[in-house]
Image (tube, rainbow, N blue to C red; front, side, top):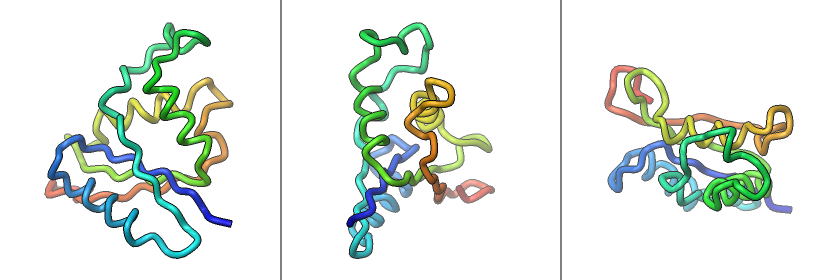
Length: 122
């Protein structure tokens, strides 16, 4: 049985070091583990409870939730933006953590890794 890990990258830059780190994880995943790099965080609208209702959920958010529900774990690859995580990654977490108590993150192990040139290093 293979372990499926969903990878979310908090930087949208093409040359992002965190993107490169995530791509290395995909390539170097050990036998029995599959790391899937999620594409499309930039297309997900900011979380808004008014549109998080059946029949109104944006397709990009549905795609993210389905990817997380199919995963056995999640790795967040994040740079440091002004001492915190990037908005695109926080937004993904917002979509994945809802509805409260039953979101796609519920019970899912999560790891956070990162690289950055900033004072906190990621």
